[in-house]
Length: 197
Image (tube, rainbow, N blue to C red):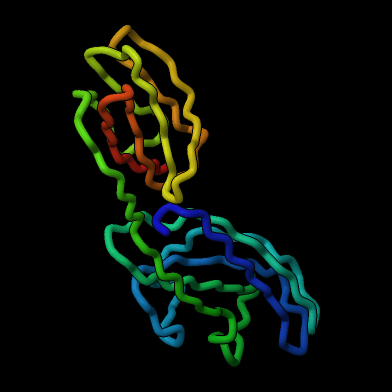
């Protein structure tokens, strides 16, 4: 789902007949379904990399990468490429065996919640990094909840700037889509927002 944490595990193995030298494994997130045979690392910007070290013949090492799935409005396929290469200048007979591809389908978050009435509460911004500002004519008997994409209740840090304005610190929450719910026992208002760190 959009914004969810993704973990990829890359196994790098020296299948040659000599020391691979100092090796680094990188990964790339490319929008669209790329034919792995057409991948050229010089055409793309790597997302992250990690040193593997020097691998003797037959040796292998695992590296783990974690990232947040891109936020999408419609189902989108991404190509994930893991690319390992040594710092040596020597060109191998088969450079293509240095990378491997897999595909990640990311679905948009579709959160449905019925809003029975509005409480005239203003919420901004809707694309958030650290703080959300909430302004209401009155906070009397209004309960505030935040739920994530799978319907779990999460807790922001709430501070008050003045009697009508609250600041919700969401820097401790993971990237993704959320819903703010305001309920005074009679009326309910909901506002969607997306956290992108």
